[in-house]
Amino acid sequence: MENFVVSARKYRPAMFNSVVGQTAITSTLKNAIKSHHLASAFLFCGPRGVGKTTCARILAKTINCTNLTSETEACNQCESCKSFNDGQAIDIMELDAASNNSVDDIRNLVDTVRIPPQMLESNPNAKKVYVIDEVHMLSASAFNAFLKTLEEPPSYAIFILATTERHKILPTILSRCQIFNFNRIQVEDIANHLAFIAKSENVEAEPDALHVIAQKADGALRDACSIFDQVVSFAGNKLTYKAVIENLNVLDYDYYFRMTDDLLAENIPGSLLIFNEILSNGFDGHNFISGLAEHFRNLLVCKDPATLVLLETGQNIRERYKSQSEKCAVPFLLRALKVVNNADINYKSARNPRLIVEFALMQLTAISGTLVAGEKKNDEPQLIFGTKASPLISQNSPAVEKKVSEEKSIAIEEKTPVKGENSIQNEELKIQNSGTASAPVVKKTLLKSSPSISSFTKPTEEAKKTTTNISDIGQAAEDFSQEQLEKAWSGFSETLKVQKRQMDYATFTGNKPVLVAKDLVTFTVLNTMAEERINEDKTELMTFLRKQLRNFVFKLEIIVSKEEGESMIFTAQDRFKKLAEINPDIQKLKQAFDLDVDY
Image 1: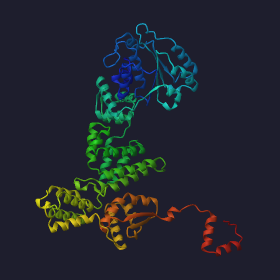
Image 2: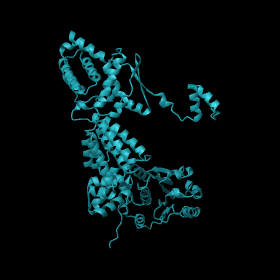
Image 3: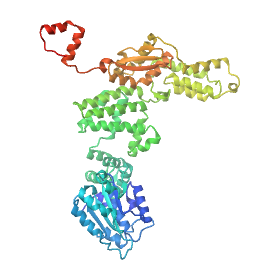
Image 4: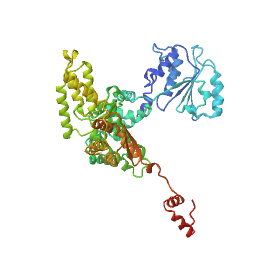
């Protein structure tokens, strides 16, 4: 039977150029060797499986190589390199500090430092290299015994320390070392290395399958190689995406895509059934909610080509993300992330964790209807007074259709600019302040019209009138009554009802707004939860009210009921004192019956 060598050992890098994902460190080490600026002590620190020990061995071999290549790599042909590759390098010693952490072990090491390199006669530049792995496991006494030698070693001695827990090393040791921090290896780099291994082993692997393995490895190349071997043993020489997720018990991307489609379609039963299917397949609800948050994050990343590089998936999955992100509006994704994050926080402390997830799914379906970016461009959020706001009312309502047709006719009649570019800017101001979903269409119509010659000479009376009306909209500050305020508030509440946001509708209709002053409106809520709901929709609410009341200067203040703010646990004495203040006869009753109630 042929001996099997795991991929992590078989394809372990033997040269600096083959080290994966640590280009900055390997370049620095090669330059130090080339310029003969080698420190007496190095410290390689970072997570597991990122190449610390590998780089330490490559550095030790390259230092003693007598025939370096033009790229400052070991030649693997000289006597020193051959002895190292055969595991018989006399001048390179490797010590595992996890099992040799006593003072005596360090004293024995220090004694060997006094002996010069065996290759010194054939190679005047030969060094004696000590690689100490897991150095943080040394005891405090061992560290102290090592200090003096580490600070002032012989000219031919170099120490390379490696650790995963830098914080456990004494500061006096750190100050004597040149420190290199190894980063977690990127998913794309791991996937490319696995593709190289698969090709070398004649394994037909799908790119999406390799990306799943790379993500599961969490930045550790050694873990990725171990997972690769495991999955190949399961699936054979044909490595598919389905085989990988089945063997690693990973939630399929398809679940999240289907779930998002149901959320966008406001399909509560469908979303709950998908979640039940996930639980039936043995997956944990907490893992699902965490994965759903990651899914929304990926959709948000796909909204801008500049951030598309942050998406760490295979090409096929990347295309599905780009396709679904076009159906999702940015406000929906932001609100969805908030809902899912709250569910993630509350999951472990909940008595009924399943209900937490199901309630989060219901909330997601409630917000999706109003914030889904449809096929028309005029459904997307628009910039209003420096903030993005989603459409306030349903696009199919008769009022909106009437408003759209009116604004289209106004745009056609008012295509003649008044004062060149200023006219177009004024028109755009009117469109932005209109607060309707048809604004982008109107703006497009206006920009197509070009200034006429007369616009640079003398504007017509009709144009003057139009310009005045448009400019006044953004600066309007008309007085309004309590009745007008309640009517406008009720109008906004009705939009929430149309959008099927029943909880928000109940919050907005639970009380009436109060016109306290000319430029101040207050609204009292029962608790802080209701206050959060109001604040979430405050931008949309203020845009709606200011447009309806033609007043852009008033402010809205949310007040939490004093009963909510002052609630506390009262003792028996506190309750008796309160009752005595209301009815003094209770005090006489206490004295008559000699009751033992003090306060």
